[in-house]
View 1 (cartoon, rainbow, N blue to C red):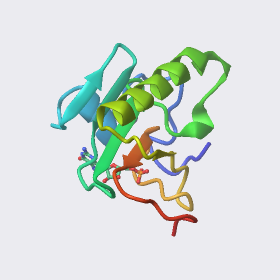
View 2: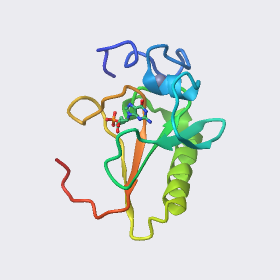
View 3: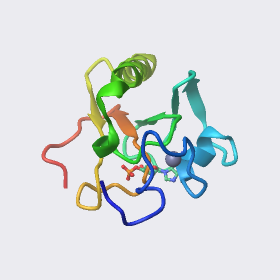
View 4: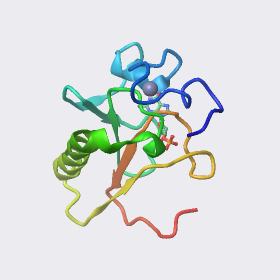
Length: 130
Ligand code: 5GP
Ligand code: ZN
């Protein structure tokens, strides 16, 4: 696990919410977002800078720094996250397919230190990514 910042240093078993974490502030409604789905564990909202016609972020409401911080007790949460991603793709009508992405660390392109899955679709997406 990274130790570069306060948000990276928190994980399961520590604070549920990290005060300087952007996505924790979206969960607590301190920062506005266009919310598409909310359950007890998961939030889905529109990305502020969409990279495709559909670009939804699906996050755990509890602060988890990245995929590196997931553990054996997170199975139910992962099912909830993936079911939400499927629901978002179906609701957006992404019948030709879509892409699920989670960026990890600086080389992975992670810019917000809170686990998130990107649901991208609505156009043909190239591979490999840049
Ligand atoms: P990452 O780059 O860490 O994988 O994903 C972070 C994503 O959060 C980016 O796609 C970025 O556009 C999005 N983002 C950053 N700030 C905000 C914000 O204030 N509101 C919303 N809705 N999305 C944001
Ligand atoms: Zn957070």
